[in-house]
Image (cartoon, rainbow, N blue to C red):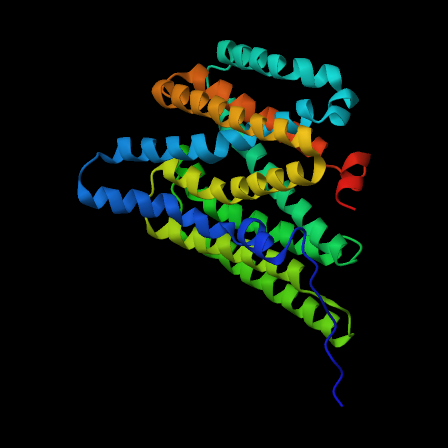
Length: 330
């Protein structure tokens, strides 16, 4: 009689919710390029205006709301707010003052070139969080090979995705040899991880299906995006929207789940009202950015809002530091 394969498949919310919003939202990344090339073929709108319009829709519906959701966790959740009241009260004003200082003294726009790196790190930290949750949900302890593999391959793919843009910005010539080296490094690390999974299988350790699915879809999604970008000449705004959608959809879904799990009747009603205000504020900021994006100060204010979100978001979702999160998601 053959021995059954030990399998573990616990989900964060439910199979349907996790698959659509946490694991497979990478499929939404194809929407900005499809919209761009589809409408461009009709000849009804110029390329630059079309890219700006699609980016505006992305800013209003996904990117800016996900930034302002930070304030729901920091200023709406009373336990978190009173934990660091002064910082959450004065932090946004400090950020705006820093934007003005950089505007006055950073004539070479060094900050605008550096801050996207923080964004890439922020997106990776979010994926670390989901990876950790899928390990904890399936009673799998330790970081180990999973984190090393996931971090190194994501890093390679992000470099491969961003390298042509960076080199072109600084007017450096680049060849396909560099990109191929990054691609082959990804394949090699993938083979090592497959071998690691095989070793676990041979030792009859439970196979964490949800974790492996999350890692596989994430990495192959970025790989597919890399191939797509390398074969088509996409405007930078379309590329930014395409890369950011995966991260933003995950965060929207997480906030909705957090609201339903964390707050009871009256508080949940106020939570839903806050969500509506988030979209109204996002509409205002997106409109301001689109109409005044050519101004350096506008870009700096937008960038510093993102940096505030990057920093605070890395603190407010630590289960080890927040008892209310451990209670909510026990």
